[in-house]
Length: 173
Length: 167
Image (cartoon, rainbow over all chains, first blue to last red):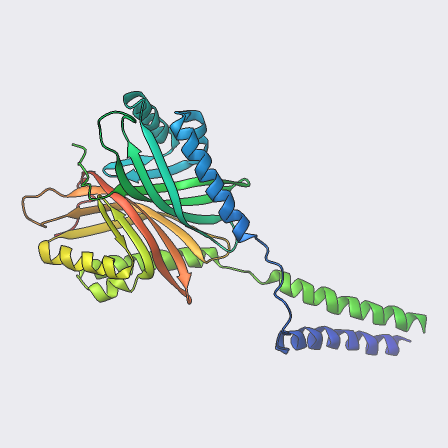
């Protein structure tokens, strides 16, 4: 009996080795691709939706909601203004809302790339800013690039950078 | 006979469990290695820019890359290259340097984000002051190589002594 068990044990070990090896050597069958772990299209739509919410918060001057869009260590870089961390971003948003209470901002997303793992994405788009809404000051247009990271199941902005068309930065002296 | 069936079933179980374990153990992406690859590529890019090697610099960018810096918007490799050549022609003594402060790589290893500090001097040792700023760069792995799909930032202040580009 011990001999039989030993033979079967060796057979089992052989199966383990050859079974795994053969699986690696066999070319994959031309079957339908496996279901993706991440629904990239759904993640892209989630980012577009979050970006639209963000714009609504900005126009409503709802700073608390705007700030919720950012990661705590997010950075923004626009035409001579660099903000590092959510505290600086919030202070600048409050200052902007106070100085330009009638400002209107609009942006449209032109592209979103989502990592296959669904935890990192980049959004690009066009932006228009009118500093006084119906007032005399002209609106300006520009382009932005926003890097998003999924944190605790929610998409948040890690970096938001861009520039107005043909505007040269004014150094902060 | 029952013992043989039991052992055979056990053997089959070992085969399945062993193969499954082997599949699970294989790491999908070495994130630390990918981060290091991006830092190394960024350093190569800086060296190419400082050497005014446009061809080498352009090899960093994806064909549909976009760059956004202080009023200059360039879409696609052709516009980026034309802008670079124009800058080199207009500012032959310009200097640039940058340091990477963070890199975040997607778990799938196909998209990454780099941020850092940048300093530039439009005329090197000339009278124009150096400036410093920040950048945000998005990298995508294309055909096994990391390439820039978006590079944006701004110069926000006079450069500090440590950030001033070497002349």
